[in-house]
Image (cartoon, rainbow, N blue to C red; front, side):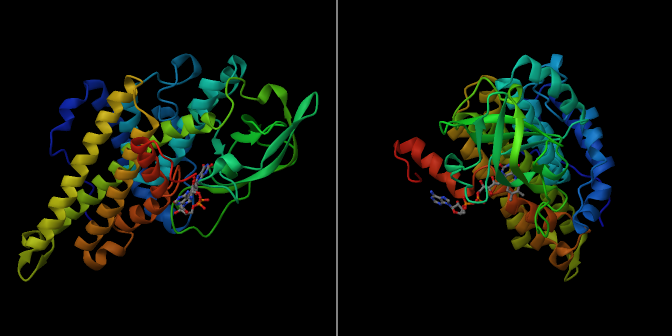
Length: 392
Ligand SMILES: Cc1cc2nc3c(=O)[nH]c(=O)nc-3n(C[C@H](O)[C@H](O)[C@H](O)COP(=O)(O)OP(=O)(O)OC[C@H]3O[C@@H](n4cnc5c(N)ncnc54)[C@H](O)[C@@H]3O)c2cc1C
């Protein structure tokens, strides 16, 4: 295995675009990933185990809800900081970034934006420290790309709501204390409910045998006549706009996160190619290896600039969902291509757990599907530029 001397590529001097504070946040997360994630992550993947001991540490680092106001336990950071945190976490593993993404963008964000003050005070500080783990339930066994057709529903029973249905492919589900669940009310309007672990009739079995995101917990959320207190309804949102607004925040984080995975693959491949000799020469001296490295670096550089610009637009509250779709789609495909090309540079060694490429590649197969598939994001761009939807 190569010594851990990771050097992040910065061909277009993008470091100059970040403030001293951004760089400090990035270094803190990078150092933590080197110390806490890199040494254990291959084994966690091989054993299909989520490294749960990292949850509290992520909380201490400020990786949960970095953009949430400080009075609710967040760090009140800007969007660029959030992006850089996601980038560094995913350099470690997409599972770690997914955990933090769900907690921040899909659980804390909707409670902060659409919740009551009582809900904010009750849940956000504990989610920020990692005392509570959160999950986001939108996808169902029969409805993935088409969440508007969901069948999970709740009925008003006077003193409480009665929730029935099932959610599928839910990150963090088996250990979640707090789930933001999207369901239809008596009139068929989608609303958000906060479901807590231990409520009668609520179970969250794990989905096993994954070949991707093996260090992440994925599960179902099953609701069998679950009584939900009325105060657990998110009061300030109705319709599909609720979950889609959360997804815009999470997809933005993915557009950054996957750059971290790609940078890890590139850095490993570059160093290996300079050390590995065939035909008495480093393999880095062959034109075809250089073509791979040059193209990889070009694609990473383009993705870095896309994410940076999107960060500016997010900070100014001007980024559109379609712009976020474009960045998510482009950058995930880029990272997947980079993982595959850099794996080839390592030859047979590239398929082992001593190097990160196969792990990143397998993880990215989930990332290219979740939070809107690759094709759906393309069709969102198509819809945006033509005004005509080709998918519904
Ligand atoms: C590891 C993992 C973690 C996840 N975590 C969560 C989570 O925490 N919370 C949550 O709610 N969900 C989660 N998901 C679910 C994820 O968001 C869905 O898998 C995704 O939205 C796609 O839905 P689907 O898998 O049902 O695919 P489908 O919607 O069945 O799509 C299958 C294929 O058909 C294509 N397709 C569908 N409709 C169209 C169309 N109109 N035009 C063209 N092509 C189309 C798709 O692009 C895709 O290629 C997770 C998934 C995975 C794999």
